[in-house]
Length: 322
Image 1 (cartoon, rainbow, N blue to C red):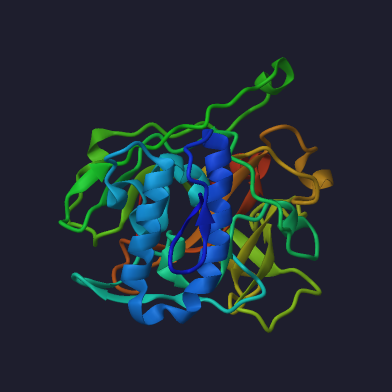
Image 2: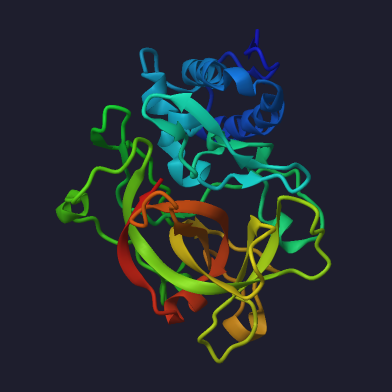
C-alpha cells in the first residue's frame, strides 16, 4: 500500500531504483508544496512528517531524516534538488519559521518559500507555456564538495552522489568548464554562518538580465533572457526564472551549480555556437543577504551556454549560500 502524510501526497511503499526515486521525489514536492498553503501555522510539524516519510521510502533503515532531507532537500542528489523552480502561476514569498535561533529557512531550499514549486524540465524556459515534464538529472556535478552549517552550528560535509559525465570523442576536443577543486582553507572562516548555510567552492561571474517580451507581469516570478554585458556578441546566452520585480538590464551575480545536457532555444546559436551534449551550465543568480553581505541568497535558477561562461570574467570563490 502507498504511504501518505496529512497533505494527501502518496509515495510508493517499496524502495526502487535511484533514477525513479528522483522522479518520485520531484513529483511529491510538486504536489506537496502547493498543498502547504493551508498549513502555514504548523509548517515545521507538517514538513517534518513529510520528510520522515521520504526518508523511510528513499533511504536505508535507520537513516537520520534531518540529515538525509534537510529543509526537504534530498542531500544524496543535491545537484538535482537545487534545480527546483517556483511555479509561474502561483504567488511565492519567503517563509518565516519561528524555531531555534533563526526565523527563515535557507533560500536554496524549496521549503524556505511559501508557494508551489516544481522540477519542470528546460522546455519551460524555451516555450511560452509551463512544462509538466520532470527535469532530467544533471549530466555532470560541478561542485567538488558541499558542506552545511547544522542547527548546533557544526560545519559538516554532505554525502552528495556525483553525476559523472560521459563524453564522446567529438565532445572531448571542446574547451569545457572544469569543476573547481576544494581546498582545506575553504572552511577557514572568520565567522560562523547561520544554520542552514551551504558552503562550497565554484565559479562566479556577472551577467545582465532582461525580461522576455510577451511574458505576464502580474505574477511573482517570470522568465528573463541572460546577456553577457561586456561581450561583442549581442545574442542572449541563456534563460532564467527570477522575481518579476527584478529590473530589466540589471547585472546580477551568477554561480555554477552543475551541467545540463542542453536544449535548443535557450541561447542565440548564431552568437554563441551550436547546441551539443553538455553545452549548458545550470546556474544560480544570487544576491548579498540583507542580514550579512558575506552571505548569498538564491534569486533564481537557469541555464547559460558554456562558451559564454568561459569568455566571461569568471573567478573561483567560496560561496556561503544562506
